[in-house]
Image (tube, rainbow, N blue to C red; front, side, top):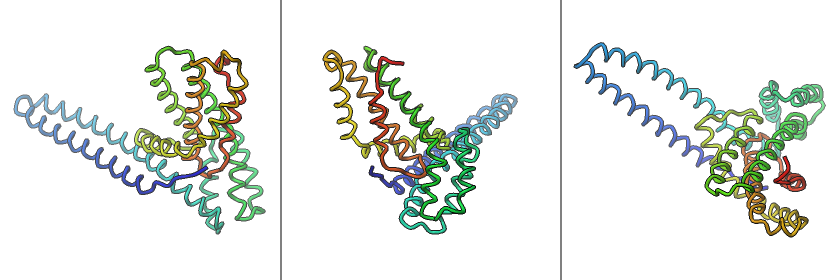
Length: 287
C-alpha cells in the first residue's frame, strides 16, 4: 500500500480555515456594532437587550469554535505521529519508548475491553521487548482489537450501501445515501482509533481520505469482485442493479480502508485482505 504525505497542503488548509473563520467573526462583530449604534439612537432598551443577546451568542460561538479547534488540532497531529512512527520503524531509537507511552496513555481508557486487556499485557512484557519490536507489540496488543471493530463497521456500512442502492430505483437518492453513510462510517472509524474530528477536522479528514483513495488497491478489488461474480448465477451476473450495488459497496469499502490509512497511528500493509474477507461473505440481499 502506498502512502502520501501532505504536510504542506495541510498547513495551507489550516491557514485557509483560520482566515475564513476569522473573516466570519470580524464581519459578525462589525455588523453587530453598527446595528447596536443604530438601535441606540431609536430605543436604548432594545439596544441593551440586543447587547445582552449578542454577549450570550458570542460566548456560545467562541466556546464552540475553541472546542472545534481543539478537535481539529488533535486530528491534524495524526499524520505527524504516523510519520514519526514510520521513521522509528527504520531506525528504532529510544524515542520509540516515548511514542509507545503516548499511545498506551491514549488508549488506556478505550471502551473496548480487549484494548485495555492488551495494554495490561503490554505493560507486563514491555521491559523484555526490544526497541525494534515495541511498535509491533503495540500494534498487536492495542491496535489489533480496534482493527477488528473497525472492520465490522466497514462491513456494516458497505453491506448497507450495497443492499440499499441495489434495490433503489432513484440514482439521486442513491448518491445522497452513499455520501451520508460514508461520512458516518468515517466518523465511527475515527472515533474507534481515539480521535474526534469535529466539523473542521472532518473537512481535513475527508480531504486526506480522498487523497488516499487514489492509492487503494483498485486492481485487487476489481479482480476479487470479478471472481466473486463469476460464481453467481447467470441472472445475477446480468443484473444491473446487483452490479451497481456491488460497485457502491466496494467504493464504501475503499473509503473505509482509506480512513484506516489516515487515522491508524501505526500504519500496516495488507489492508486488501479486508476486501477479500468482505467479498467472500457479501450478499446484498442478506441482512
